[in-house]
Amino acid sequence: MKKGKKIISLGIALLAVIFGLINQNMNSDQYRVVRVVDGDTLILDIDNKEERVRLIGVDTPESVHPDASKNVKAGKIASDFTKSRLEGEYVELEFDVQERDRYGRILAYVWHEGEMFNKLLLKEGYAQVATFPPNVKYVEEFTQLEKEAREAKRGLWAELSYEPTIEEKTEGKYKASKNSDKYHLSDYTHPGEISPENLIWFDSKEEAEAKGYKPCGICFKE
Ligand SMILES: [Zn+2]
Image 1 (tube, rainbow, N blue to C red):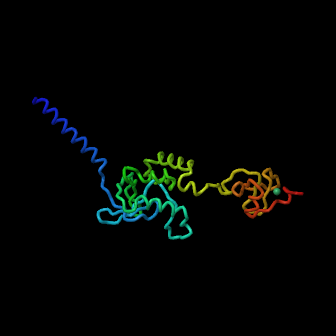
Image 2: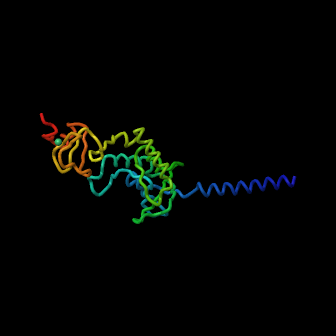
Image 3: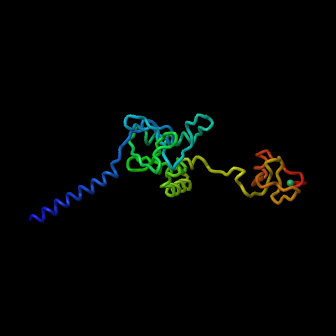
């Protein structure tokens, strides 16, 4: 009997230790979200002080940039998403290597109701991966989440169909130089090649002409 009791009390002690350890990891402090600044920036009440927190590893489009031309529609959508989920809510913070950036902002992974909000932004298509070296412990997982959201056209990826700009094309039916207003057939062989850094490619005449280019008189002789 005595031995049995001992084992039970030992068991209870062990359980207490185990729960103590779990609690240490799970029960981090909860902070109230006073305000959502934009999709990836929050103001938290930390010990009665308002602190600016930048969600790391992600970037949402600008919505409150002082330069109004940068306040794109996408920024408003991302900001509204974060507001709808976090404003007035309680969150926990997880840090990477640095706790603050040079502007004094707290750098964190923000947890809300057992889910990391940085990941949720990527998963739902409201943010892109942004690396904040040396704070990159989730970069591979984040990259995968962004890729899946893009492919599934979730969130902003549904709104913004990605089209490469003309400078990014590396081939096409027609080509031109940034220094001229003429476009040529892609097998253009006039003297004086267009230097690679000035090359622009088009898939159609319409595309070239929409950008203000005119047909070359030699390539397009009647
Ligand atoms: Zn030509």
